[in-house]
Length: 332
Image 1 (tube, rainbow, N blue to C red):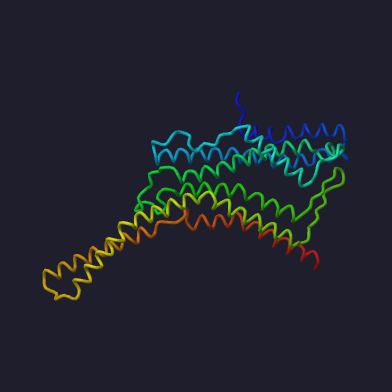
Image 2 (image 1 turned 90 degrees about the vertical axis):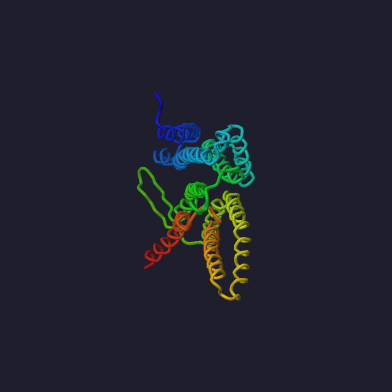
């Protein structure tokens, strides 16, 4: 019997962390029943479930993008944009993360290994490494797609020449990243302490300049992560626009030159007809040139930009405003 994906996500997110936390509590008992259930392992498990779902979503999205690339170029090898999940690569990212954490915070003491749930945190970073590998490689896949020999759509059919799905895919990746600034805003907004028995204690944190700077930094990172994979797609669009203009611009110049020669001359009937023909041709060429100029420089429209702003910018701003309003009302 095949288990549904959501159940696998729950198992991966909760079972190992709870088992590892239980082993830690056998060495260092928790402070009450609430300390056993509502602990670091629970919070990390929620993030792990999100990471597992994000990995699944990104993989499916890249499969759809790979199928679309195959439609644009049937000669393209199958699975050219599929993400290879290699355990060795994930392990390498995991080791880098552990080394970075060790350099920042130092090696834990023997007692802290159990009291601080180091094994749970190590498992969390392993799933995080899997997420970062999939996320980073998907960005590389989108970037690499811009260098493939794709058969672009005519500019008369699509102003993005059929490359809009790559912009949508990059927006989906930015949406997945958006959980980090949103979570940071919430964590810095309130502090929740739960004790069983004892009740629930909620503390509202004051606004600090460092929090605002860090939130702005997270937003800027999200914007960079959105645009970075699309640079090769942008280059492809600009090259296509330049190539189309390379034949219509000389034609436009030629028609203008011929029209200049005809206008000063006596408007005899045959020359008048020729002048009218040149004027009609000029109108057609100008319209074609304007249509080519409308080819977009990025594979998305204004609606995508507004959604990106809604995803990345609005939640942190609302979080800061909420903190201001809460602190104002508390001091009234």
